[in-house]
Image (cartoon, rainbow, N blue to C red; front, side, top):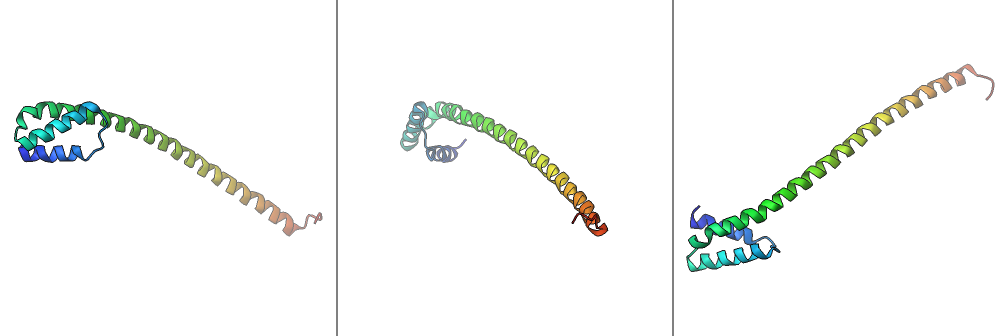
Length: 111
């Protein structure tokens, strides 16, 4: 990774609101090392800190995505079931209306 690529990565990481003390310190050290032209000595520690910090976020985000996908599957199943249930109710209404219309046409004498 070139110094320009490293500086771009440091800038991208720096744009995040970092609350973890170790990651904040690694970020500050690397920014200072880049300004001093001594990034090589800090590069390995910084890359390790970034990998650890963002790896945790990725795992958390993937777990959240699995949860959301599972909930969406449940909602889709409920939607499918309700649509089928609605179809049955509509057919029942149509069938009963047909019977009632026949009764009306035949004049059952109760009306």
